[in-house]
Image (cartoon, rainbow, N blue to C red; front, side, top):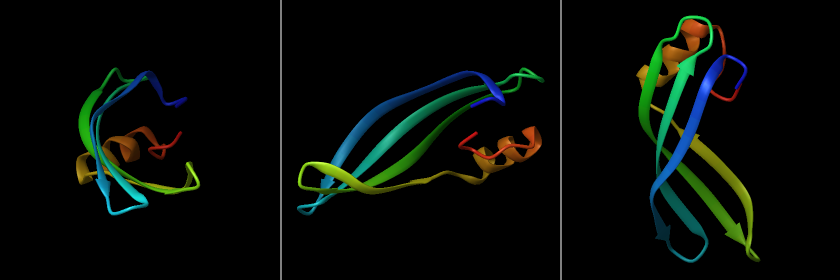
Length: 78
């Protein structure tokens, strides 16, 4: 997260979906290193669990989070 000097992620709640999927409500906090702009957001993470291992996962973020990272010239994963 080079574009941010503050970066925290908190699990709010996780929900099982069937036998092998988990959906997580996650809360994030980011502060842009160069501008000091702050983003507090909620997002979704989904995981597939096989043999007690996470074998796939993805995040779904809202438009304002995408726009925050565009302004920084970064992607949400940098």
